[in-house]
Image (tube, rainbow, N blue to C red; front, side, top):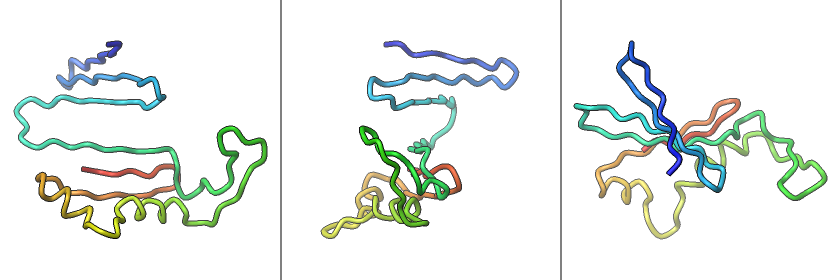
Length: 107
């Protein structure tokens, strides 16, 4: 596996990084002595991203303002089950946010 390690001796921390074949960038920061674990999935799609050219297309499209925030909420929608309950059963809390340039999901 091609995992890059970056260390900061002053902070006594290290960061592990790998870019997957799909292009997904994965960052991992081990924290010794901590009892909680956190994961964040973030995408570079925020409130200012309403005009773009889809992959494989030649023409730009315009989507309504607020679409990033709308999509943030749609991820947690399931007509048959509560996604929040599913995560809760595994001991996880979920949250999300959208800012100008990013949408992130926290677990």
